[in-house]
Amino acid sequence: MSVYFPVQPTHPLSRPHVTPPLAARAGGGSATRAATVLATTTLPAGTFPNAVAVAPNGRVYVANDGSDDVTVIDSATDTVLTTLPAGSSPRVLGVAPNGRVFVANFFSSNVTVIDSTTDTVLTTLPAGSFPFGVGVAPNGRVYVANFASNDVTVIDSVTDTVLATLPTGTGPVAVAVAPNGRVYIANQTSGDVTVIDSATNAVLTTLPVGTTPDAVGVAPNGRVYVANFDSNDVTVIDSVTDAVLTTLPAGTNPFVVGVAPNGRVYVANFGSNDVTVIDSEPFRLLCRSFVS
Image 1 (cartoon, helix red, strand yellow):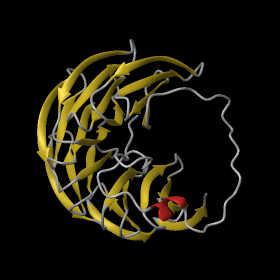
Image 2 (cartoon, one colour):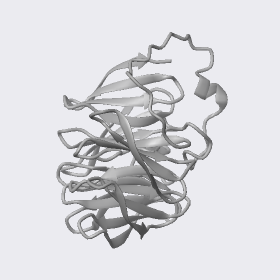
Image 3 (cartoon, rainbow, N blue to C red):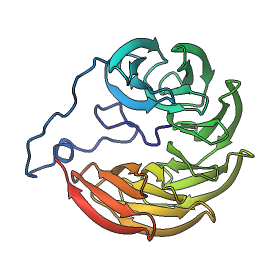
């Protein structure tokens, strides 16, 4: 499993482009509704925890941006097992099929590799400038999007070695991988998506999307959904043909994409405090649900 979106915008350093104004984050004059905590327990973490990934053995890894470490949780017992050191400002995590966890460290421009079986740090690998997104292909190759150097670092998760550095658009921030192994990199500044063949590590094409693409997700049918923060819409891409199929409206500032097993796509709209729901089969907008 890997995390396909940038971290939540919980503090000013959590994303490289300007954080929306306080009024947008607070929801302006929108109505409020009471929240109920359903969790059975609250676990301690480090400072500014902002990304989560789950290993095949059920262990949960939380990247703590402010304290430069990773909290490890046993999901069977809901206990904190250990805290592992990372680089400076760990932002996003990805998990390879062999259970190794890859942590992108934004300010130190490197990747911490963790063995989820032993919960030990195996090595630290160099990346480009300001790594900010991680995606893992079915063949175990790890793709790390480097925001400031406009490229992607490719890592072999079996040998923990850097295989290649590939060019992207400007400001790559998010990575997703389709079932056919094609890798989709959302380039925030240039407003496009770089497509890579994970079998050959060749850059196949660059596709235009909306303004400020911040997140990308893939449905079970292989369709790719790109959330465009500043144009308030979602670009739909066919991963078989690498063609842009359509653009769907979203709420204000769509920022995170999640896909359910039934193929429905959920887009969290940061500025309008709601969620856009998309049916990935006919790629149609189903509804927008208010949250507060």
